[in-house]
Amino acid sequence: GAVVSQHPSWVICKSGTSVKIECRSLDFQATTMFWYRQFPKQSLMLMATSNEGSKATYEQGVEKDKFLINHASLTLSTLTVTSAHPEDSSFYICSASWGGGELFFGEGSRLTVL
Amino acid sequence: SQKIEQNSEALNIQEGKTATLTCNYTNYSPAYLQWYRQDPGRGPVFLLLIRENEKEKRKERLKVTFDTTLKQSLFHITASQPADSATYLCALGLYNFNKFYFGSGTKLNVKP
Image (cartoon, rainbow over all chains, first blue to last red; front, side, top):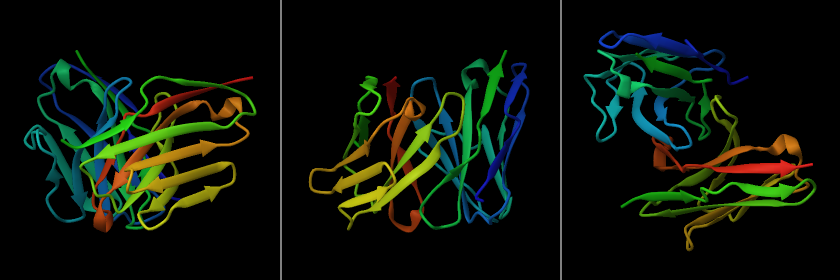
């Protein structure tokens, strides 16, 4: 149990386009979902926290207009990278929590912006 | 400033030995601390959670200690195996399970 599915696992796009990444909790209702960004050999950087039906809370330094997060239901959150640029290339990982303390992570999405 | 520090150098040990990884933090007051395993190109996998009022937690070959005075957690893997080779991340959880912050991880290499 406690499976989080993230899609797509990798995506290549041209500079200036937008990319949407989906995060689904398959067998539990996620009261909170988190989006992280990870650079090679570096820590997971929390980007934003989202609760179902409400606006996401963004960490300091994260542009909310660039990284649009929607948490439409208790099982689905999406991250849209708008007008992507090469510096947005990274590994994006979502995680979900049912409120019990542990996080369940998706497999991550590798974004490459050309 | 707030920091979560894990040894950035890889830890190399021989199979069968005990691996000990360290997580130190400053300017946080975590309600609990977690350890995760991450394999290359994959999302982290939850291993153990220890709360601020707990000193030690065990799960099979894993043991975690949490010292809120020293602001440190130690993560032990006993009878280590090559399959234990991975990067191990500690994460601090704030009250209400509302936010989680991760250390940069320590890479463990267990040699046969």
